[in-house]
Amino acid sequence: MKSEPLIELRSVSCARTEAGVRARIVDVSLAIEAGTVTLLVGETGCGKNLLLRLLGLLEVPDSGEVIFDGQPTAQLTDDARVELRTHACGYLFSSPFLLAQFSALENIAMPVFKISRLSPEEVRVRTEELMAFAGLTEFASSKDLPPFLQKRVALARGLANEPEVLFVENLDEMIAGDASFRELLHAATERFGVAVVAAALPSCAARIGERRIEVAGGRLASAVTP
Image (cartoon, rainbow, N blue to C red):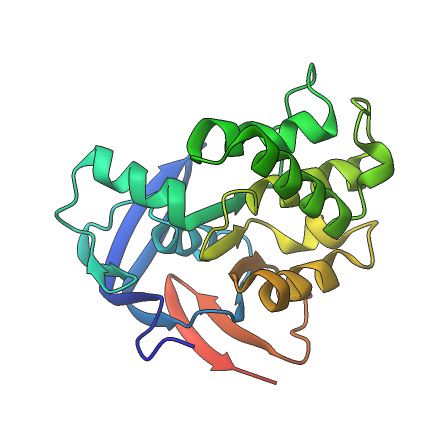
């Protein structure tokens, strides 16, 4: 494990309005270690999803600094920020955002072809590995998948470019109807060395090995590791 945090927020504040709802983060300092599972827990509107986006470099803070893998990000150009996100981050949003005209295999392979410098054979091996990991091998050519399998395709796609950290929006929705999905996230940290940062409602209790960070009113309320 690295001697310094994978991601560090230093006195970060940010306010955004989405769909008419105001969210904010106020003077938050936080460190995320490599290869760990962290839950950002709070009620709807508490700022946890904004915090997730700040950690994932999808938002630029109004003040403070985000340090990613030892690199300050405040002065990065838009292109440099996209480059860092593309190669270091994976994202799993509430909607899988799968391309309906593509099969499960094609949805997973697409980002590898677009971003990596792997040969076609290496892409095939990588894609098949991820499909087996997510329990999707028998659905490789399928396009019309039930919601829980769509989420697994999105998970495999999020891991396709070997990110350092995987960001999961609304963990509660991800694990609904798929009891083993949460175990897959832990397996990803063990097998691929990826850190996992997930937003969740208070009803989503932390499990062994998960760090639970409570967010209320845009501030950190507590941090507990079972």
